[in-house]
Structure formats: structure tokens, C-alpha cells
Length: 544
Image 1 (tube, rainbow, N blue to C red):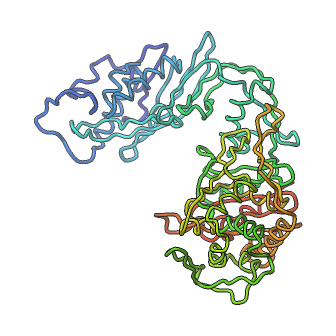
Image 2: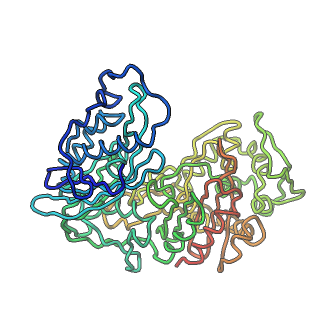
Image 3: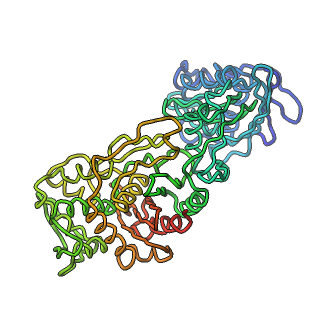
């Protein structure tokens, strides 16, 4: 596209403008022989072009598409894409549902087949208008059947945050805005704490009215998923925000946001053991899926907290009891080994826990005489799988009842065990106090929702031994380096989980300091203490 060209939309009358001169109207399909690949007529050309699109084709196709879009002609514009069936309704909705009445689209220089552009628009609804600007891009590809250059259709052509199935809409907001604050009354905004973006949107959707707010007029992305809140893009008229107190802690949240940014994919959650209050939630990337609370992955050896609790409670081991830790162990034909094939001669359960010996735990599975024992312990004591009602959408973990080799893999946090940072922080909190307190991000008094409760607490002697083993892990075991900077009464457990197709294992770490427990996972981060450990330590140092 020519540098400086603009596609202008003015009051619903559109023209392509270059240097202030408007082109006359012309048939956008002239010389193209039909529309996009999905609904095109037969090409009049005797030869279908192949190979990469040329610079001239990219310029021509993008200019014609942007002009048709600017003309408000969704039919023509959609035919200039490779998916007219999906492009047509989206382009129509831009004008009729999003109520965009004026816009100027300014393309930038093409980068390969991609053409970036900025949109400066006006949205008008029921007598109120407001400017709206954003940037996006399109890609030009060669049509598979026609060989013509076409815009590769994706919802992001309309707006960069628009996902499949979602739509743009302007009207009265489905929920009033909120002024969210932490447990001490300090403001929480998505601008200052990016990881809270989707969480604050969800809290607004669920509690905006309960917090005393009134709705305004907004342009939003309406999700196709009923559980996902609308995302506000533009506020035409403000309603009255409701004030919503959360359980979060601004200091811990700030530390969590900074800590996860050191890795391309990381998440962390902090929970107060004495109450279940969630003090921090952070993800990198900060936008999109809330992996910290909704993720589902094998947690590696951090699961040994639950395994050790089960073994001690059943009387099959104790913290100071001698436990065999050979280099390998086999159960129902499935062989498990320790990192580097290490062994611990004459070690105890504490030694194997602190050094993360896999085989010591596998060797004890026969003694339980119940392959489902770990699943029962996770559910009945640690609250895993009990339909947590945190205040936003979350996953409460899963330990399915398995048999034979698959059951053994669960003992060391592999196989079918599924957890996220929230679940592991809660497990650590339960180990710390002996009693499961379901994590919450807003108090249940706000809406009277049911809170999950576990069937029983850990016996005091089990909780004491378990907590002490975590203290040893933090003082001289695999968590020593990561926890060195953390003060107070502290404990930890490391983990690494192998994922199919991933050259490096995921790094897991969970720990506590006084009345704060935190857990983190770093994708492809390697050993637990190397990547996830420093993330947890940073949050524990900053926590209340």
C-alpha cells in the first residue's frame, strides 16, 4: 500500500484518500474475477498463479480490502478475504453492532506479507460519541483455488484482541464498573497490575451490582464463552463504579508481577494459610488465560507433600524413619529413577523428601494396599477436586483414582495428576496448618456462595512432621538456594515435571514463610529451585 494512504470513513460516506484527493468509486472486484476462496466464482484467467504473493499484490490486495471495509461494504470486503463466510458478519457488525460511525485507517509499510495499520474511529450510540483508536494488521496470502492475493481472514483484522467466536458490541454494559481494592484498601488496577486484568474483569461481571455500581455505555468484546467476562475497549459514558474489597495484597501482587516477568511463561499464587485468602496472582504473559488459577499440569515432586502426608497418616512412614532410596524402582513394569540416578544410603523420609528422592516414595506404594489412597488423601484432607468457589473461575486440581504403574506415577506428581499454582499454594497452606481452607479472592459474605470444606484435618502429629520436612528442604535440601533470602519460619518443596514434546521439564516450587504460602510454575524452567524457586521467594519476601 502507498505510504501515507488513508481509508477514511466520514459519517457513513467513505472514500480512499491520498494526499487529500479522493478517488472516484469503482468496482472493487474489477479484474479479480470474483471473490474470496470460500465463495468465489470461476476465475477468468486460464492460469492460476502460484508461489508467494508479490509486493505489488500485497499492496493492491490490502488497499482494496481496506477501502471496501471503509466503504461499509461488508459483502465486497469479505470477498477479498479467504473466508467470506466469517468475514462478512464481523465486518457488518463493526458498523451495525459496534456502532463505528467515523474512522480513518492508516496503513504502515508492509513487513513481508503483513500490513500493519492504525484506526482512529468514532463510536456513536444514542446521541453520545467518543473517539476510539487502536492498531492491528492483516496478512495477504495467495488463494488456494484462485491463486489471487487475498486477506487471510482472522478476527484480529477487525481488532487485535478479537478472538474466534467473539464480537464487538456497543451498548449498556452488562455489569457496572468496579473500583477494586486490596484487603488494606489500596487500589488495584489492571494498568498497575497487568496480571489482574482478566480477574478484575471477572470480578466486575460477577460483583459489579453487588458492590453498588451502576452500568455505563461501553464498546466491548463480547466473548463466545459464557464464563468469560466482556472486555471493555471504550467507555462512552461512565456509570457509577462499585467499590469491591478483595483479599489481595498490593505489596505481594507487585512482587509477583515483577517476578514472573523474568520468564516467558510463568505463574504464581500466594495464599494465607490461616484464612485461605488469596494474596497475589500473577502470570506472564499477563493477558489471556489465567494459568495461575485455571492451569492443569502435572506438578512433579511438589506432590510429595500430599504423598508424604498420606504415608505418615497411614503409619507407613515417619519423618525420622529409615527409608530406602535406591537409584531406580519398578512398579508393575514401570521403572522410575532419581535425577542423575542418585541414591541415599541409610536415609530417612525427611532426607528423601528434602533431596526429592522419587524411588523412596515409589517403594512404599505396595504397603498402602490401596492404589486409590493418594486420590483419597488429596480430596479428603487437601480439598482437591471439591469445586472451589474462589470468586472467579478456577480449577481446583485433580488426582484421579488410578491403578498399578499410573498410580505409582502420581506419588511423584506425574501421570494423571493435574494442578496449578493456586492448588499447590493451597496444599502448602493446608500442610502448614493441618486444615484445608478453600482459597478465596473475595469474601464469601459478599454473595453467600458455598465454600468447599474437606472431610477432615490432618492429625497434629502429621502436620508437624510434614511442616518440619518442608523446613529441612528450605534449610539444606533442594530449596536451600531459592529460600536463602526468605526470613521467618520457612519451608519449601521443589518439583520438576516432564512434558511430552518439551526438551526441558517444567519448574515447580512451593513454600511458606510465617503465615503466607506461595507456589509457582515456570514452563520449561528445569529444576524447581532454579526458576520457580526465586519467583516464590520474591513473593514470600514481600508478603504481609
